[in-house]
Length: 413
Ligand SMILES: Cc1cc2nc3c(=O)[nH]c(=O)nc-3n(C[C@H](O)[C@H](O)[C@H](O)COP(=O)(O)OP(=O)(O)OC[C@H]3O[C@@H](n4cnc5c(N)ncnc54)[C@H](O)[C@@H]3O)c2cc1C
Image 1 (cartoon, rainbow, N blue to C red):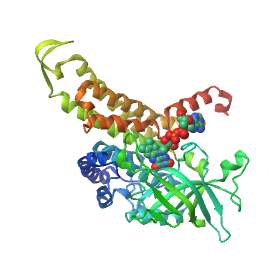
Image 2 (image 1 turned 45 degrees about the horizontal axis):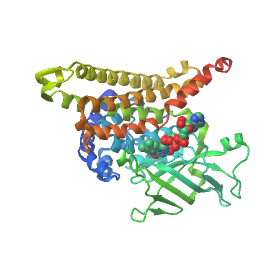
Image 3 (image 1 turned 120 degrees about the vertical axis):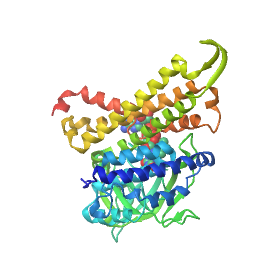
Image 4 (image 1 turned 60 degrees about the vertical axis):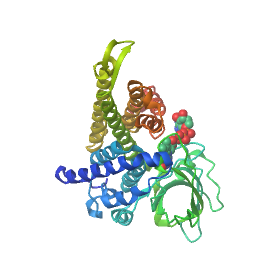
């Protein structure tokens, strides 16, 4: 486990920096949503803030922020702009996951680079099956040692800013054949870390390139492009560990950081809905309320709607912070081992359900003007849809929990 021992006093000025950066993200966010590109000016500001080293232990030159403190920073940034923050969230996820799996020497080297301002990203998902699919990407062993990677990763969030790549690939035989046996294939899947040295004009590197494919319903500023590996060399010291067993043990860094993104989005939905609905006046109306002058803040379903949203934000905050705290203090040891992974994921799936509910409700309460392009509400509605996909996915979590509970003898063993 990484040593993350930032005190509350040390956290205060860090959070103030996050607030400043969040304001900047809020200011530039609409432009990059409209232009449908990565928010390039955010790179310098993010690096300047020093927040990239937030969760890197002090012994490697970082700030030593823990899971909860990192979650709070991600939420605050996301309150400003969730799409831009989702990009940098990949950095926090990979620092947390890789940092907890790498050797001492690897941590010194790679996390040391992070403290110098470098950013990490993690394209794992592939076309055939996303995060849960065993990698079709091949790592072919080389006579001189190390591997050459061949394959395509379809989700490369933060590729426009990162200079360190982490990914998974299945180690083949010398001729590039994947193991035929399923168990062997699972064990052969490796977790790798390497330099992502890309010419930012041509988008080409040595055996690797970015293909600009990102064009989606929402989360435009994440720059989630396709990464093509064509003989990309990873030296032996770029091997971190077996991917599946490794990743499942530290998945809180992915799942709870995604949850933090959507908690920040929930806070923003509430803030924006309050701002509009506390002021809006309908004038003379003839409908559910019949009156000569109606302020919407006095209409029953609008009062309830805001109250309902605020309740969801507060419950989500409690679920997320409590989950972070339980994991940090090892209370997750009290959960059945088999359920650790989906139980951590519950915070994300709960928050995802709530943010989806809230973006829809906010539009309905604000009324038709929220449907017009460029309003914050239509944007939040589109962006919130991304919460359905990132791990853990709600359908798979409930299936997983149900399966385990219907096989009690295995849970007990
Ligand atoms: C904005 C955004 C940015 C992203 N950035 C990244 C990134 O940087 N890196 C990255 O690696 N990924 C990234 N992702 C990808 C994301 O993690 C994938 O959506 C995820 O891996 C799921 O894959 P999929 O959506 O392709 O669905 P699939 O995996 O193809 O799933 C299709 C269906 O099959 C079900 N299913 C899949 N696997 C199983 C299983 N084992 N058991 C039962 N049912 C199953 C699913 O629930 C779903 O209903 C990003 C996604 C979004 C929306």
